[in-house]
Image (tube, rainbow, N blue to C red; front, side):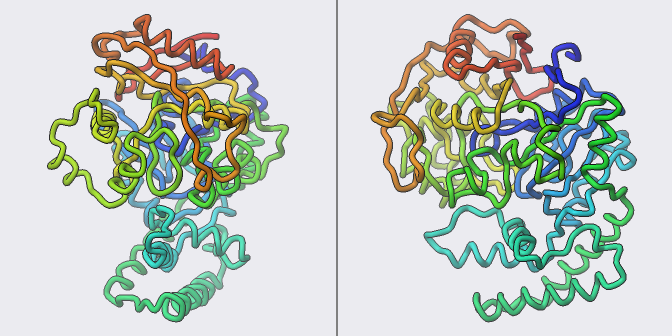
Length: 462
């Protein structure tokens, strides 16, 4: 494992970036790589907040991390970077899910430049999304957008502010501004009982934050690199959700691409190396927005927006993975891959792999190595389809939501049996699929996910 991490240049930060709409399995990818890191190495988060969950299976137990980097079970140092927005109570609560046998509090540090998510940010996010009606974009309601809005508007409170004498005064001032927006623009009155609980939780979180090491992102990274140790930058969400280069406006509020590592950590481009890009063997998407290869098209998009998992399971108790009805096939794939949002519980829309969008993500991130996850979810299919290009389109349209594209597909045969039983040797049908992708994308696939557990991973060399 250690000898083929592919982190060749130890003088540069290695971004690990999702190449789709998030939910690609970055958590497992980071955890796998982290298992080969030492105590002097470092894993950092450079953007986002607790609006995305990275699912990790460790010792046969499932964990979902939203703020804490996925390498927590290893030995490496852990850092929450300047580009993040941090809900203090959510961070405190997340630490309680980690087994007591894992020593981690002495390995965690937080940037003083990271932005704080206030209780009123949570309310602004939820109410603002609700008021959009049919025009909603699929926000998680975790206060991420409003917190970044305050940052850009030069109005935010940051982690470093919690040690200033006037922090409580500034907190109350900003909170009152938010309450006026809620009352005057959204005509919303805060429930006092709910507000008291949110306030209590927030200050508990602030007390916890004050107990952690607060270190400048650039400082901890520079010291780590100077000692020839490795630095991994773990991204949240995915490339197609980047606030500027994703499928706008159906995006998150931060820069999810490799270039965001620089601004999110305060380091120069020269310190950032080629990225490891992570993608699923198929595609999923949570929330609104265009999805060219979606099973069932618009019907699926509306269904996943309006329905919950329990209802779907009742209506489709045993969906057919090879159904001639693509809508039902999408439900079956969702069931096989456990594709519900790790944070929100929402149904993830499903579709075939999209080469045009994947190539775009690889290029924009300078991905020099790829990790494919969930290949095992395709067990039992009679054929695999891949969108090779959009008919008559040489490049991805500027606004996919306003431009209809027709996908052109290529079919592949499927293996027999379960990939999780194959060990480190993939069947020839799986290799055919993988080698086609490598040739088409022009980048080697170094790890293949063949099941949920840590050991369900086939390592490949280039």
